[in-house]
Amino acid sequence: MAPEIVLSREEIDEIITKVADELNAMYENKNTIPVLIGVLKGALPFMMDLIKKLKFDLVIDFIQVTSYSGTSSTGVIHLKKDITTDIKNRDVIIVEDIIDTGLTLNYLKQYIQLNYSPRDIKIVCFVDKKPLRKVDLKADVVGITMNQAKFLVGYGFDYNEIGRNIGYVFVPSKKQLEEWDKKLKEN
Ligand code: 5GP
Image (cartoon, rainbow, N blue to C red):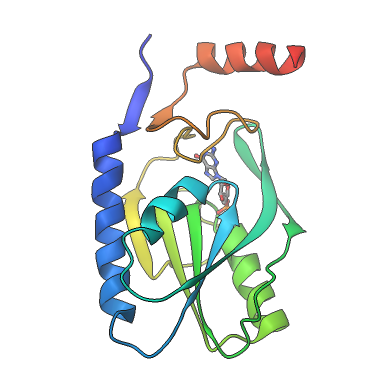
């Protein structure tokens, strides 16, 4: 059975352009150099495509947390890698692949605020998946809103670390997941 494609490469490009336009309007004529903090690993393809369309001076950094296992969020968040840029009194833009329960970004926003005292934190996300939200967390710029709680793979989204390199976003079939499970066991 063909995979259920949720976002084609063309649709992804349109989303990136829309997000970049919004950010350009927010920062282009300001005397500030925002620090974009990409949330590893899922946001990597989105962040790399996005920054190429941004027309203001910026700095990039990365932070890594984990909360997912298989196809569901565990709700327990671990910080795996911290930023290295000094962001005190600076404008920060957190770049995330997807907001699901909202717990990860809620944690990250508080962690960054409490530990590094930036002037401002904005949140940009590629996909805003609404149904399973557990905390009242809103992104400042949203690529696309989804009202179904489907488990997505591709364009940064993984299944146990597999699938991030696929150029479009899709819902993997049960068969696909079984094939990946088998392969993972053998590697
Ligand atoms: P939250 O803390 O908002 O529940 O989840 C955020 C993280 O869960 C995302 O950064 C992403 O890594 C993971 N996540 C949420 N939904 C999906 C999904 O549909 N597919 C994949 N592969 N990861 C997801």
